[in-house]
Length: 116
Length: 111
Picture 1 (spheres, each protein chain N blue to C red):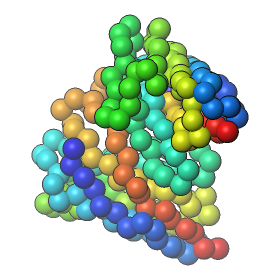
Picture 2: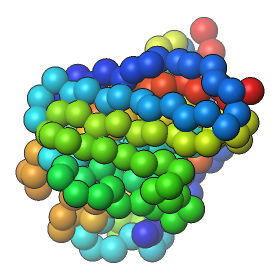
Picture 3: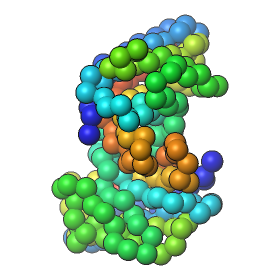
Picture 4: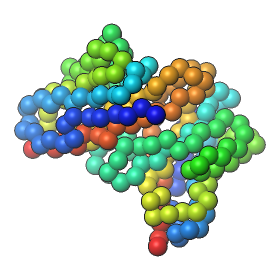
C-alpha cells in the first residue's frame, strides 16, 4: 500500500497569509486528491490533482483560493491563499495507486492548520 | 451521486460483535459499496468493499442485502482500537470514482 507523508504536520498562521502543504507518496500513483476536514465534521473533497494539467475543483472551491500543483506521479502541493479563520481545518492528501477494477484510496496523516 | 444513510452514533461493548448499518436505496447497478474508517487524529483508512456478494477480510465482513439497498459492516469482536467514525460510501464501478464522504457513524467501544 502507498505510504503518504505531508508537510507540515501542523501550522499556525496569520490571516491574510498563504500556506503551501506538500504531499509526498513513496510510489507512483495515478490519482491524487485533496480533502478538507473542518473541526468536528466529515471530509470534504476540494479537488483532484491532475498530473501535468490543472486540478479539477469541486463545487465551492476555486483555483485562486486553493491552487494545486502536481508536477509528477509522486508529489503534489495545495496552497491555502489569503487565509481567514474559517480556513482552520485539517487538510488531507489522498491517492489511488493503480487502474485496476477496484482501487482503494490511501490517506495521508493530514496537516492541521489554525488561522488566527 | 447516490447517497447513503447511517446512524450518527453507536455503542458496543468490547469483545462483542458490532453491526453497523447503511441504507442506500438509490444505489445503481454499477455502484460499489465501500467502507472506510477514521481513527481519532488520523486520516481515513480503507476497511472493505463489495458489489453484490458478501465479503470477508481480516478487518471485517460486509453483508449486502439481496436488493443492494442496504448493507451492514460487521466487526466480529470489537476492540478499543475499533473506536472510530465509520463511513459507508458508494462509487461507480465502471471507472475509478472519487470518494465522497458523508457524516458517518461514530462508534464507541465500552471496556
